[in-house]
Length: 150
Image (cartoon, rainbow, N blue to C red; front, side, top):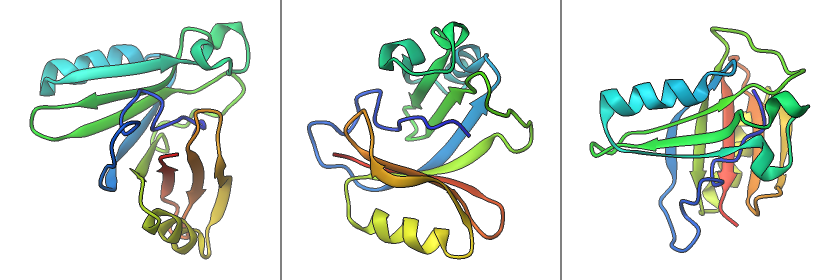
């Protein structure tokens, strides 16, 4: 899973938010089309950021790929997605994670407990978008992303 910022699209910057749990899907270059499709299915608003906007990615072919996209629906669903940058593996069937995000300290505790017996892939630390972010695979093989608003 690519290191993508759940807070990058702008939510949670000016007001406290409750912790959330939602799916985060990794795509192989078609995240924008997928999110437009899901918007057509569920309604709502999509916000997104490209790798170029954050000066990241693994080459010029990543510039227009989505580093983070988020769909908020009228029914209260939240779906997040990103494109896989060059050089990182894309494995269909393994391309989804569960995202925990918010501004509460309980998220650090969740991260620690989820990592017990698992594998940390991105340590929980401050990122370029200003939030603390970490990724791990728990002992059951489930991918988790934790973002704590800065």
